[in-house]
Amino acid sequence: MMLRNVLSSLIAVVSLAALAPTQADAAAKQKAPDPEVIEKLAKLSKEVVKDVKMEHDADGVQLIDVLLNRLDAGNMGDKDKQAFAKGLEGVLTEGKLREPDKMQLYIAAAAALGKLGADGAKVLHAAWENKRFPNKKDWVPLREALLKNLGKTKDESMVKFLCKEAQNPEPALQAEAGEALGNFDASDQKIRKEVVSDLLVKWGTIVSRATPIDPADMEAQNARERLAVISEKWNTTLGKLTKQGFHKFEEWQTWNNKNKGTDWK
Image (cartoon, rainbow, N blue to C red; front, side):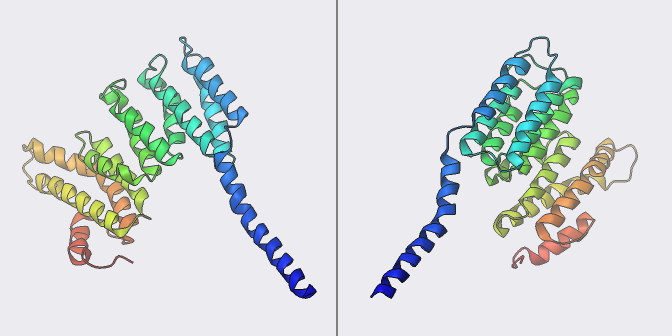
């Protein structure tokens, strides 16, 4: 009888020990925001974003890096991450608009948002749609950063948006949207197959437009220039999504036609 009681006590202790990490993880996720995170975000907002002279952008980039290091080290709970995303949203939407040649603060914010999952994706997508950033050539580098980091969030709700932008009139943005889709290489094969088929349709359209050899055919020339910009990045994405190693559109099209109905294990 005594032995049975001892065994029961040991089992109870082991069970509690096994539950402890799970409970600790849950507590970490639910804990109140870290005062240090809040303090640094307040500094970012008041001393950098709202600085009308825009003299402290380098300090802002450094603050973002400090918070990013904290995130990478696993020292941010869910509420900290949400606060971080909100603070980065302020960087992109508040304060005096920086000139296109001084957008380091915006680029740093976009890179950090890329590591914040769905919270980051929501902010990046909103920034893309925001009329604050002109849809002009000078702003292409920032728009590239928004697309690149949107892909890095791995938020599958953004796949359709990225596929749409893979037809952007600006070749650099079309290339970047295609590259961003390569981040979904761990997604269910249904999603990967849809992305691959979509990119190949778009790629095939450009290839067909580029085919005429007549040097006077400007549409063909523009299509060839577009292919030169997108091909390498799209090849990389198709390789990630399919685990294949082709390098030409025709090779990808042939492989996909044969395998889109098979299991992509």
